[in-house]
Amino acid sequence: MELNTIIFTLEDDIATITFNRPNALNALSSELLKEFAQALDNLATNEAVRALILTGSGDKAFVAGADITELATFDALQGKVFAKAGHDVLGRLQALPFPVIAAVNGYSLGGGTEVALACDFIYASDNAMFGLPEIKLGLIPGFGGTQRLPRLIGKNMAKEMIFTGRMIAANEAQQIGLVNKVFPSESLMESVLQTAQEITRKGRVSLRAAKEAVNSGMDVDLATGCRMEIDAFALCIASEDAKEGTAAFLEKREAKFTGKLS
Ligand code: CO8
Image (cartoon, protein in one colour):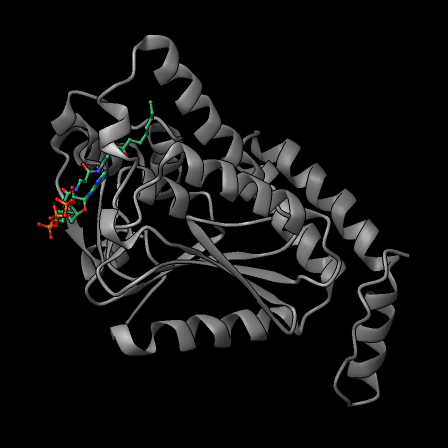
């Protein structure tokens, strides 16, 4: 598949998708959303992939939001189709059966922050700026920002960001729990890669179960979430990875996980 707006790479078992419209600060156009959706579909069934990193082309932006030149032409129906396409692709991103890290390397605005919010966690460069500025365009976030942001940083913090449309710097984003860690620009990708490698050395079955337990558990009451965890734990303990992990501990050696689902 020819890609015009994203770059896909796979090194060992870690995939990277780079949003690549540098002249528009990597803004999300309809074409980009289509290519991103297709890439995620391919990844979801690619057994060779154990983690995904998302980042932006250049050193100025991760993604500066949805493409405003396109937005400006939309009527209500086109707006709904575009918002739905964004929700679909971010739903697929969130549901990938392996960890996804956002490496936010500059402006992360509107749809850009919404993409990052659908990842498992965010690392940022020290020049990153986060915001949901849609209110300044007479809009509201349309790719999940009103839903995922309050779940991550709390209702009132999220409302302040959404109502003012203000940008916050990486350090403040870290203080409020939007970003896990901040790095100098030049070492961001290396640090993200190191964490991705640390994660991919763990068992595939347990990583998958942990991600699903956390994600599904956030949408239900505590008792239901705890029941989900019990079932997921039982599946893990029956796996070859768990037999290997516990045996390796007892034999005082490194575990060699195979990721087999039995
Ligand atoms: N869309 C299209 N083009 C963009 C965008 C964008 N979101 N952001 C930047 N660009 C373009 C600029 O127009 C400019 O193009 P050109 O060189 O041809 O004039 C180029 O990128 C460089 O940008 P600037 O010259 O503006 O660079 P600055 O360093 O001066 O400013 C900013 C950088 C602060 C990031 C500034 O570009 C900016 O404010 N961008 C817009 C940010 C924004 O408002 N984002 C939210 C968009 S709305 C959204 O994301 C909604 C998501 C849900 C949609 C639901 C659909 C219905």
